[in-house]
Length: 420
Ligand code: EPU
Image (cartoon, rainbow, N blue to C red; front, side, top):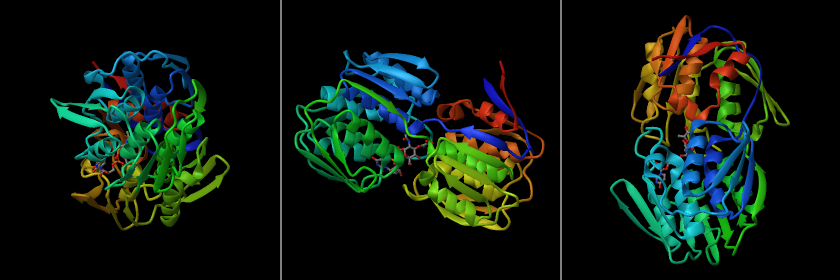
């Protein structure tokens, strides 16, 4: 078992470079299945979820080579199977993208029901609704789902909820559908746009990604070769921005797209932090205790749910009482019980939490309940008095490459310890 041990109290200073987005990489990896040739991917985060995606693809017949820490070559010339390994696919959420991609490629796929962070109910009804509208049939039993189509025909699909996963999945399934598919009420996240850019570079005809109406004109084939670089991870960048604010530090965050962080920048400025953006770089710093605010998480371009726990640490230290309303996930306040062990005053009920700001947090043993909760607890440990031990860090490793190395390079006293 591994844990992170953090001696808090040092303001973070220096510069950090952001890698490709986890949630884009784990969609683009299955999307490569639509290419019957070779895809070279740069800026791939070397994280557990990416490695898991690679293992699943390999079991389907992909040949994958890491040519350096963040570059992959994927040869999908010979995909021989349509049954994905259930033990692996049920381990993480994004295995659902295999359905859209394999429907497109082979018209058939069986996968285990997706796992991933426990954030409350995570239905995939909108994915299924989209596949069935395109002409597929689906059968769900014994923890697995089998989806098949004799042919896929473009149609108009209205998403009842704004869903990143369903938007990307239907996009994947419709690349080779006959005629035109329209996805209405689509998600607009940067990784939706990234997947569409990847597919268009391969020869797909997708228009409107990044708006709530995406139009896909089906094509008969794609190119057999592509080199593509994954979009920078706005959640990783936002995590460092909030760590800078919480620690009253001063950070230069490189290789990011500042516009993807507008909602966070606006909140940081509102609570008294400072942000300057130029080109692909963000300078963020704080000199005083943050002030209180009210936040509601929303689909992009609203405030991202994936930065809510990290912002929760900042607000637990703010002057006055703040409120966060979580509108995406039912159970994303599990981290607040851990922060309270460190001296925070947070009351959460259902999808709201009240943060009565305290002067200080104090080091304690805490437990990462999910990926972003883990990132939040690391930030809390960095600013707390004394020693914090963060347990269950496998969640953090699912989404952040070497989090402790990055924070160490910014002056933090943080170490990974392997316990037997
Ligand atoms: N929803 C449905 N039916 C569906 C699909 C979604 O009701 O068929 C609901 C969900 O229950 C939720 C809302 O719609 O209330 C949004 O869900 P969405 O489908 O957008 O989430 P997701 O695709 O499962 C991705 C990220 C999450 C991130 C959300 C929201 C991946 C693998 N995961 O999940 O990332 O929180 O979008 O932006 O891309 C994380 O990185 O820590 C993480 C949890």
